[in-house]
Image (cartoon, rainbow, N blue to C red; front, side, top):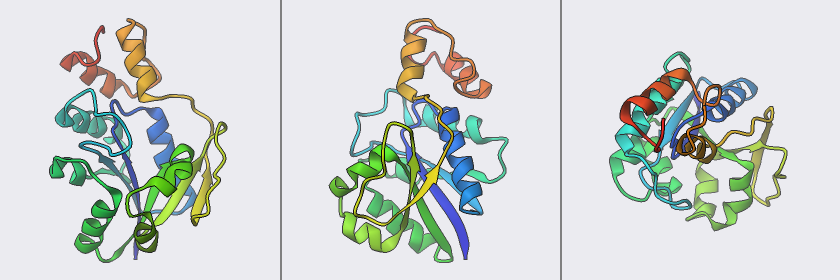
Length: 189
């Protein structure tokens, strides 16, 4: 069976923190691939500030040089609020010979009891909790823990820096910065 990590998110914009998480989990769990899955409308966050097509283009740019990173647009194609259980059921039907690992941050591990249909979801997939310095992986659910180096970057930080006219160099790949400038995303450039 092929082993694939799933890293979902708004990716508004994607940044080096996302890439580091994907790479660390890929290596530590000996995965075959990591699929980045941009959400159309995440159930636990505010709506994205940019269009799905812009976010897809930015993810493609961010992962283009990593052969084991792939883009999967299943949630964007659904064009509505996406619940993980629905995404997993479709993926397992489409790819019956793949074992999926759903990668989440420590903040989401603590939020697991609030996930839609979490008990059924736990029967279908393995969760991987990425440990960060400011969170403990406190949960009664079975979660594979992966430590990653600390990298305090967030999409919000990047959007705020752009809006204030500050540099975002070394926070996200240059190809993503080029797309942000070209499409005039997030305010000042």
